[in-house]
Amino acid sequence: MPLWGSSDAASNSTIFAAAQVKKTPNTANRDALFGNVTSNAFINGVTVGQFGVDANEIAAGGGKEAHTGWVLRTVGQGGRAGRVMTEVLVAGGISSDASDDSVYPDYLIVINTQPANDTANTSDGENATFTVVASSVPAGAALTYAWTYANGDSIQAGANVGNTTQATLTVNSAVETANADFKVEISTTGAANVVSTNATLTITT
Image (cartoon, rainbow, N blue to C red; front, side, top):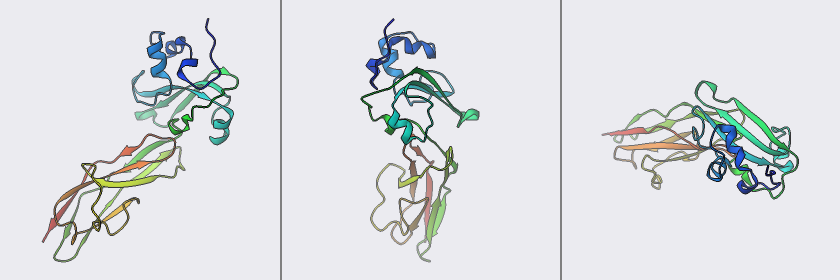
């Protein structure tokens, strides 16, 4: 039987790795499983992927993994959201780290309250505010916010009184004189980004 390689790359994972998620042991399924963070790609209701973890990643992650080596990581969804299971496939050192900390899912971002629609009157100089409430599982992640128009365009200069990188966006009705839709993308290191639903600004005069 082929041995697992000691480098953090799909090519060093045996084709039999795919059998752990009940997929045909072949190169294509092995490569797809490596580094996978796409929900339901292999098993409905969970995000499962295989990663090579070295001692540096363990230290950076505060010891979340018990051993260096190859691991199969499963993250629950829905009613099992936040439940993480890590199975050590091969104990031992992993060298040539592939810098997969950028995609290794340490956190799950949850939007607890979506931004609501708001109305502003230009004659009265009213402002509209849009607020999103988000958290992470486990708690403690430093969340970053990026507000844009619903179509992805940047908010025009002067349209925001507040800051487009905070949980609350304040819109100046004297500048934003037409109805518009806004959304916010929330991110943190080690998690998939989450985008809110659209919130509508209605301008009255």
